[in-house]
Amino acid sequence: MKSYFIFVIVLSVAYLVYYAVIIVQDLYGKKGAEKTDEEVFDLGAPEDEQSVTVTESDTGFNVGDEMYETDVAPTASPAPQEAEATADNGEATVAEKMERLKAKAEEQMEETATYLSDAYTADELYKAMIAKGKTDNRPELAWKPLKDRL
Image (cartoon, rainbow, N blue to C red):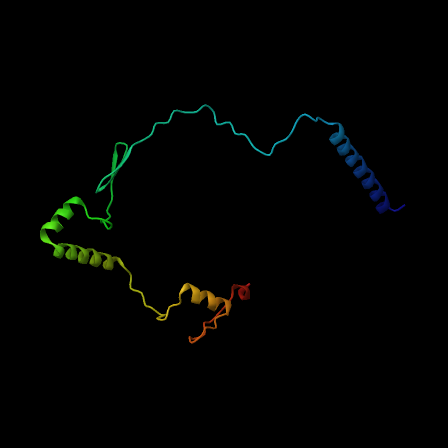
């Protein structure tokens, strides 16, 4: 016999013995022990945790004994002192404050150049995607699917 046939016979006998042992273990093994898929972690004794009070004010917030100040201008509703000032001075002070806030925000903005003056709505863009860039009464979009790059 060649060495290959000897290898095949030995391997087949080893598989037969292995599967016979596994089948016997399944039939006559411990039947009372059920295995579950969940894991149990021991976290130790529960520690006593105390809650910390958090309070909010006009200038910031407090967490426990520490105070944190925020640098955000009120946008939703004016503070009580501002409400009294607007009641006395009228609409002019509100407009002035809005102009100052607008100017402050514009200082922080970046200049951008618009390149698409005829913007698409969500529905129009969806239709253009389905039609692969061809739309009615509009210039054709350059459509480059991601599949082409792969």
